[in-house]
Each structure stands twice: as C-alpha cells, then as structure tokens.
Amino acid sequence: MNSTDTIFVAGHRGLVGSALVRLLNERGHTNILTRSRGELDLTNQHDVNSFFSEHKPAYVFMAAAKVGGILANNTYPADFLGKNLAIQTNVIDAAYRHGTRKFLFLGSSCIYPKFAEQPIRESSLLTAPLEPTNEWYAIAKIAGIKMCQAYRKQYGFNSISAMPTNLYGPGDNFDLQDSHVLPALIRKFHMAKQRGDAFVLVWGTGTPRREFLHVDDLADALLYLMEHYDSEEIINVGVGEDITIRELAELIREIIGYEGEIRFDTSKPDGTPRKLLDISRLSETGWRASIALRDGIRSTYDWYLDNVA
Ligand code: GDP
Image 1 (tube, rainbow, N blue to C red):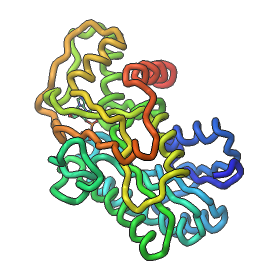
Image 2 (cartoon, rainbow, N blue to C red):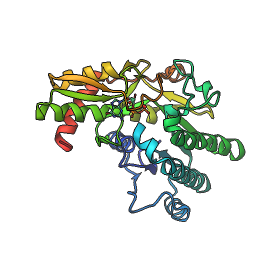
Image 3 (tube, rainbow, N blue to C red):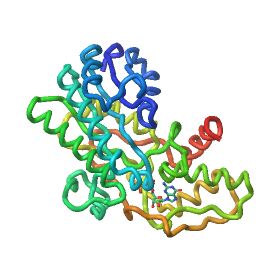
Image 4 (spheres, rainbow, N blue to C red):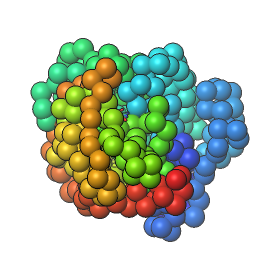
C-alpha cells in the first residue's frame, strides 16, 4: 500500500474501523475513504455500487457489520443475519466489480464450532455445530468468508479473511445490554465503585474462558496482513492465551480499585465454554501482539473515563 493509494475503511466508526483509521493516519496514508451510515447505507446495493464506481478504492478493509454481545445476538437474530449478509455481499461484489486490488474481510472467532478442539485451528471451520447464542452472526460471517473464497476462485479477486478473537479497546460499546463482557465489566465496576455498591453481578458462572486482543494490536495485524498475506485460507488473529471470566472480573476490579464482592448471575447464559484461537498461521507470517491485557484494560478504562463516564 502506497501512502497515496485510496483505502476504504468500511465501518470506520466501529471499534475496529476507528482503530484502523487511527493507524493508517499514523502511518502517513493520505487517501483514506470513510462513510458514515447516514452518508452511505451499506445494505443498499445500488448506493454501494455507485460509491465504488465513483471512488474505485484500491484497498478495502471490511470492518462494517452489525455486532454485539451474547444478549444482543440472541435478541436480534434477524438483524445479525440479514443486515450482515446484505452489507458484506454488497461491499465484496462492488469491490470486485470496480477493481479493488486487495480486500480484507473481517470475520470472528464465533464462526468456529461450539466444541471445537482448543486452541482452535482455522481448519475446524464447518466441522461441527455452532454456539446457538451467536449462530446468526456466525452464519453471516461464514458466508462472507466463503464469498471471498468464491470470488478468488472464480474471478481471481485478491481477497483475504482474518478472524479476530474477542476484541476490546477505545471506542468500544459500553452499553450494559448490548456490549461484550470486557467493556460491560469496566462499566459495572466503575459504577459500583462510584455508588459504593456491595457487589457486582457478573453474568453466567464465571468459568467460560475467553481470549482478549486489544483493537490497536488488531489494526496493526490487519495492515500487516494486507501487505504480507495472500491466501484463500482464513487466518486467526489472537494473542494465544485466554483467561476465565472470573479472572477477567478480578483483574478489572483490581484496575478500577473496587473493593466490593463479585457475584455471578447464573440465570444469564455462559455461551461457548472456551474459544482460544490457534495462532500458528499468524505467527508464521512474523506478526505478534504487543499490548498486555492489564495495560490494555487500564488504557481502555482511561478512555472510558474521558469519553463515556
Ligand atoms: P461471547 O464471547 O460471544 O460469548 O460474548 P460476550 O463477550 O458477550 O460474553 C462472554 C462471556 O462473558 C459470557 O460467558 C458471558 O455470560 C460473560 N459475561 C459476564 N458478565 C457479562 C456482562 O456483563 N456482559 C456480557 N456481554 N457478558 C458477560
């Protein structure tokens, strides 16, 4: 990617898209294209085509999607499946039609089977049933991966697909209903500390294990893959280690300095028991994450204090 190439970051207001734009700016790219939802409705095929026809981006980072945590997925299955299928189909097809040189599609670790062997290798895709709480989103993402592979096979379209593990960082959604666990717990512990609550309720049993990647690390990996990875095979992006939800809660409690108790609300779902990604393929490319979880949570908490609290 040259510094003057036109680069379209779809979904630049989201957690991943905003991190990508920050990094592209930092690296001196001067031709970054972004469109808010109001300016360009990615579910509208005609509008997406016109946009690509006019701007002909050379590189596309496909970070636009309807996303959310375990409860949101369960509550809005039609949106998670339908909107994501529409958005990605429109963008992939328009990029191909209008000569995009390289396309990076973002998947998710939830595309893998619920009981996939751990750590999860890329080859376990479509080998067993999915986790039901997020299968709507997962099916859409799997279709996106397959679409990239199909366009590569049939048309020679240069598209790659990266599967990030659970992400967090500045710009995250801190809503208690719709967010993922890490921002939700930052908010819960912060509010409990302020109010002097005796305990914080953490959903589920606390035993599921999750791997967390800082979104600035992800953006760095995605730029690296755009330059160095060229294969129809999907590639996992993670840190290679995970912790239990209980350990995560304890770490966040300590960072925020909350002295009360942690209690578990077992009426809420646990979701998949574990989803640690195997990052051998990524390691072979020479990339690795550099932000430690403790440091990442601390800076994300600072961001939350400045921007949300
Ligand atoms: P998942 O990785 O797709 O399951 O999505 P989440 O990040 O939403 O949830 C991860 C795990 O954290 C699940 O076991 C949740 O039950 C648990 N969890 C604990 N407290 C919370 C919370 O306040 N919000 C969310 N979203 N999850 C929580």
